[in-house]
Length: 375
Ligand code: PLP
Image 1 (tube, protein in one colour):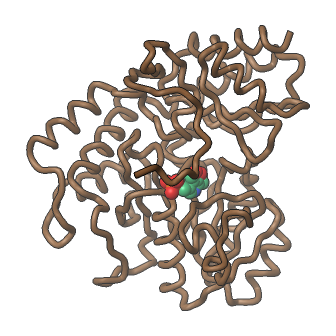
Image 2: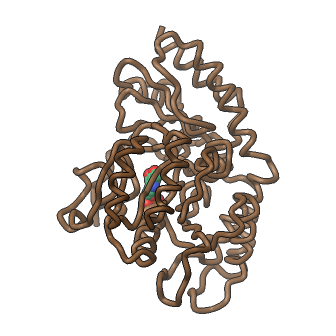
Image 3: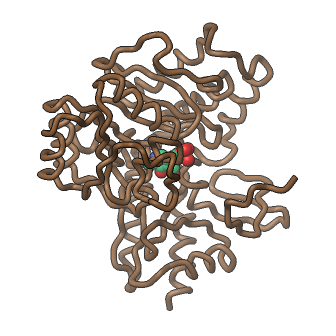
């Protein structure tokens, strides 16, 4: 059987990894400043992470959600304490798209409405409602196109208010820092206003923190820079440091009932062990404050690149915007300098999403490579 060929692949075969470094099948080492799309939060094969998962695997890896699993409650308490969202309730699933799908569904159950407001350049995943709320018609199949979605320009409070006033909106879904779209940010005043408008007009604000959450912005959640109070917060990516896990944090105003949501694999023992290890490391190593510190370091170094248009993003969710398309530069960074970076919908943007414990001297390697490429 052949693979269903949906991914253009670089001819690199990672075999092992440690911290911010990946070693391929030929023994070549690569600096990972992309974390496989913002997934690697605490560094590859962190010893505490490996230990937690290994110990759990030797006990029990999985059982269904029809019996007690104390690791889920432990996870909820740890996540509540670290994020400051203790009053929210946790539902666990397996990916970012699934988190947003559940968030949208729950908002619709809660309000009895079905129209969704999403924003231009958004990305929320590839499942039915999540992809319909994603601003990329090329990945929306006719099956998905039946959802009732209105796309607005980011940071346009007036248009948002006009739409919410119509009274038929169940959810406003918002990335605090757009990932795939290219690091545009919801202005803090806009985010806060959107939160108040949702309360006034009976809609649920969904903070899509799948990429910008989990400490990446310098606070646990990107919305925490804004004073907003979301109804639902969706999480995945950095949550498991590579182990597939996602979830939604649900505001106490939204009530649970048996059968409302469900999943076979979500919140299994092994996934909880991985997610607990990530939380423990973020806490023990002070990685939120460290990410904020590394942003300043990154910006200082970036300011020395004369060709640069701007640095976008926050914390360790950053983009370097150039006045030219960066596809070739990105390729040269990989093949000549052995540094992984990311691309975005904005073709002039190099995305930098390192592990939250990346070292300054590792970031220096990027700037040295850029200097030699751009001279
Ligand atoms: N939401 C955001 C903001 C994302 O960046 C992504 C993935 O890139 C998703 C949702 C979907 O996550 P997943 O690929 O885990 O389904």
